[in-house]
Amino acid sequence: MFATLKQIFNPKNKDLQKRIVFTFFALFIFKLGTAIVVPGIDKDALGLANLGILELANVMGGGALGNFYDRIIFNAVPDFIDLHFNNFHWFTFNVADIFISLGIIGYLMKGVFLENK
Image (cartoon, rainbow, N blue to C red):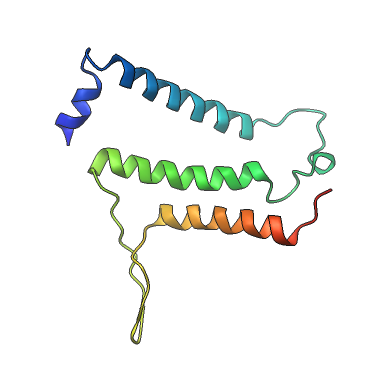
């Protein structure tokens, strides 16, 4: 696993290094932009009061970054939550998967049940 990570820092992989830096920079700008409170802006007037697109994207982004971290550090995403009830067996999943699923469910519910202003 560490041998694979060391290849990223190999001088021959300039293109891969540029892509990784750009990806982390884009994620940082996105997270920063969704966290900054701008004075004088009314979130209610913009329709961003509750469960807005950016909040749901943050939920999914957090889950995706959790899975990405596991993939880099452990070279796999360890799933450890396993649900059983009688003969029913649900898929094995992890906490990051829960947040990704909650973000998707939130997007669907926002699109179906909430009116556009």
